[in-house]
Amino acid sequence: QQHGRYLQKCVILFCVFYIKGDIRLVGSGSTRCSGRVEVYHSNSWGTVCDDGWDLNDAEVVCRQLNCGSALEVPPSAHFGAGTGQIWLDHVTCSGNESSLAECQHSGFGSNTCEHGQDAAVICSDLIRLAGAGSSRCSGRVEIFHNNIWGTITDFNWDLNDAEVVCRQLNCGSALQAPQSAYFGPGTGPIWLGGVTCSGNESSLTECQHSEWGNSYYYYNNYYYSYSNNGHYSDAGVICSAVSIILTGSGSTTCSGRVEVYLNNSWGTVCDDGWDLNDAEVVCRQLNCGSALEVPQLAHFGAGTGQIWLDNVSCSGNESSLTECQHSGFGSNTCEHGQDAAVICSGEKTSFCVRILFCVFYIKGDIRLVGSGSTQCSGRVEVYHSNSWGTVCDDGWDLNDAEVVCRQLNCGSALEVPQSAHFGAGTGQIWLDHVTCSGNESSLTECQHSGFGSNTCEHGQDAAVICSGGKTVRWRSGSSRCSGRVEIFHNNIWGTITDFNWDLNDAEVVCRQLNCGSALQAPQSAYFGPGTGPIWLGGVTCSGNESSLTECQHSGWGNSYYYYYNNYYYSYSNNGHYSDAGVICSGYKTV
Image 1: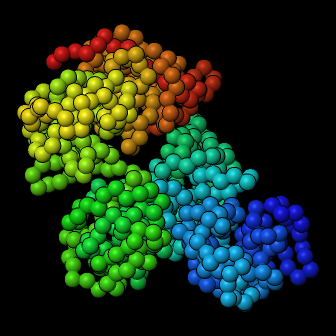
Image 2: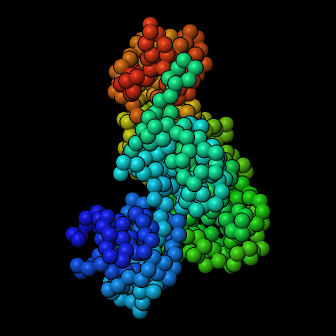
Image 3: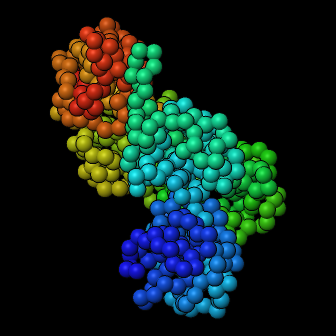
């Protein structure tokens, strides 16, 4: 037997079913993805003692062996007692490691165990949950086929399908069947589409579905794509056995009110003593990066039912919130107005503070606020040295505003109102003499006079008016009023295919972005191919509409084939190499 090789060989008393690198699953009754865990060290195989062995440890083993997610950790040498060395004991993994050897342990060969304590795992084999905000029982559904992990498109995806996944993963019942890449877009092939389960199947592959990797179906004289938006249509599940979620008004997969599942019911966490260390554990547990903020006072709305935890005190290194010190499950003197929340780095968010003014959009270190502000217009404020401050409008122009609008996913800059148009701010004036080229990804990348260095007053606070949320923007153009047309929908920027694209369509875009009249309507990705979904095809405008979405079009994300002259054609047959563009006459004063 050569170390590092994949083996499938019967050996007298037991079968060695799977070896990868320095780990294998073996023993009586073992399979490719279940068995006694053995590791290779000092030229010999040895077992792992089950002291402290849990699902986090098993999760690492399952991942390392391409065996999906961990379902069980059977105790007491469930797959038979091994022989020889017991290499590892007191293994402690967070669950995110790529190899068991990366986890903490007592040292190779250091233990007081017997082989009757040999650790084991049972993995899900061909299915797993992944993505931002995922946990053992919630996430993007991925399936293993042809030695590659791939996703499932959300066409027809419902609770019956999710029920099968949850059962297969030993995660209870299906609570939700999220669509539209709720847990983030995956990578690799999209293996299945049109999955239709009764809900009673024991495996997802027993359900009706498209052929492996087949992304088209025929209906009512048209061809449709199961995965028209690619990985932005990846299917997900949330099962009842999930232990923690982020929810509430304005929540996302990586920000929201913290709720934990105990005794068959969801409950909140009181924010007494709640800090960034506690939030760090939540963010790590949900695959959401690091903790950015811990909003207080039920920031994402007050929950209902039980308040399960109070006085939570984490070091920040725990793998689960329930491992932290707390006052005991259900022991508290709190009300839901104290429900704890987190904002993780995996995804920034927007929120509204209803006391004095509305903070309409925050992303990273920048926000738009003030009297009359909206999600995409307002006084510009930046976060520095643990406090928000304004930007002085000395030299403030459309290039500077363009960076702010891009940073906030708010399209293009339309105006830069002067003289504290959205009201004067308070506190620090952090930036002055900001000079951007317009191509920077963040305002702090632009030249400026230095944080806090200025001779301004708040009557000079800078502001922006962007083209807005679900609207259009430019990309890769030579000026503010030319480029590839992109549109914001379902929180994702995507392009428009050039089928039927003409000056009437371009006229609407130019008007919408306050860029005068249309000069040209370039096709064939004239400004370069975009990325992400192709949101619209077959756009047909009269030229008088106030917004591109008022024009006739194929429907959001619908790239079905149309019939012409005995052939079927696709609106986006060449993908992003058919992206539409515009060249406008320039900024128009209104």
